[in-house]
Length: 97
Image (cartoon, rainbow, N blue to C red; front, side):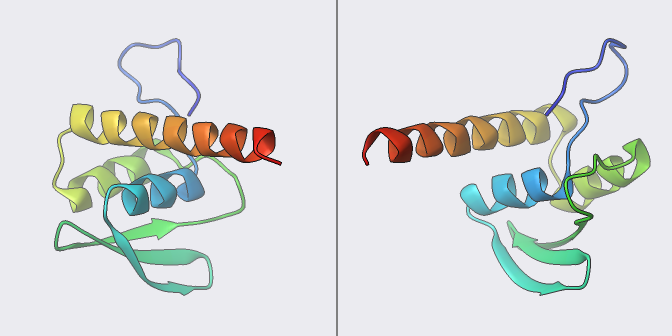
């Protein structure tokens, strides 16, 4: 997640970052076909495009937030804590070798 200088614009996120955060918070990947993942999150179907590590367009990100039925603030808190947890797990794995 890269912060943006413009206060009104959301941070940029890739599809992989979003899927990882949703799964860390209890979501399950129902299907991953082609370049889209179908994630069941809190009983809602969330379709997330995964195109390598490219950042998603703002409109796509807004659509994903609507599909999760979370507020923008809840969604960004979820994603930021999910990314921190992934980062911490990688560090722990490196030092446990």
